Length: 435
Image 1 (cartoon, rainbow, N blue to C red):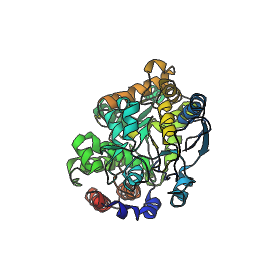
Image 2 (image 1 turned 90 degrees about the vertical axis):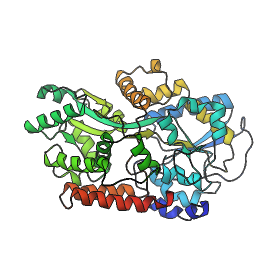
Image 3 (image 1 turned 30 degrees about the vertical axis):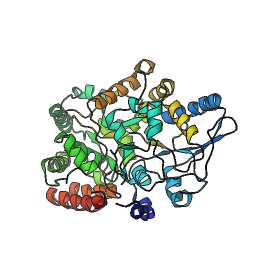
Image 4 (image 1 turned 60 degrees about the vertical axis):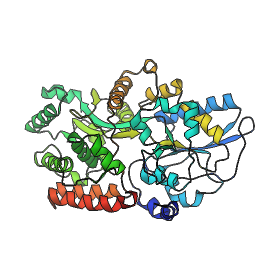
């Protein structure tokens, strides 16, 4: 699709984007010199000061200012702030030189296709960032001229990752006389055993993202990389009545019917599901590594662990958000220097020792035992080329579609075939411009 056509859709896309971790921002007008003493790097990111990335990037700012002589003008922006003001700050001098931005076709890909963020391929080669990033992480940082991820041009750099796995309350398992499962068959046996003891085993939420991520993970159990490329990168049409999707939808319905998931799941929010694991009322939670740090802090009444989904070769996940450089940034060279600092082992270690998932850490630098186990699990997913992104990514607004259709499924309003048909129609409509 032509760049001008996609650009005219900017405001509509901003309104439509409701997926996890979404923000929009823009570019800085004017030109600058090469940086150094007297220069200022305008930096935006939306990580809290106590988060793994917030701590790492605060240290990066100190190092950057010491080594370059430049100053950092930092503003913390929430997703909502950036989304609401995107149309006002794009193409103005109010925008930063460097910013954290959400990966994916409808976000970073959209800005790339409209020329609002810079092609940083030369900097990637110069600094060797590509050598530090696994292929599946690179997918979210590289886009085609139409803004489809997995292209040939670098428009961002991630320095952390994320994935969806399974959290287990080990004390609850011990009390029930059960072992942590290592295969999908064992996973089902565990679910049956908890139900037989009067326990609803899975913390889930159908009013928000977790249920849709479980649905996609069930599809991935039957899928290969070709299915992921078709679904996420539009390589070939997706068969919405095919074995992957049909198995996922049928199995999710069975999970509710068999009592693995609470019957009122359609009205439960993600926060409620997470809290039910924290307070020990649900022994299993299928969700993302972004909960890890919170569980370390709050799920202190029992021993717990996290693994990749048992029996799966493919897992939901991706790089973290990207560092992107606006096309008209005044100080691109300073931006590249800052990105490079965040990729250093000592900064990556801060991410890893505070519950984050670094992409280029020296494992010897990870001193926290739980964090080391998490990173080992994530690295195993990367080594197997297992990251398979998220089900709502392919089309703007598809997050809401998934939530609505799966609510209809689990409440019995519609059957499996109708659910798949509705999902497929909305997917095809939302991805038409990319194919």
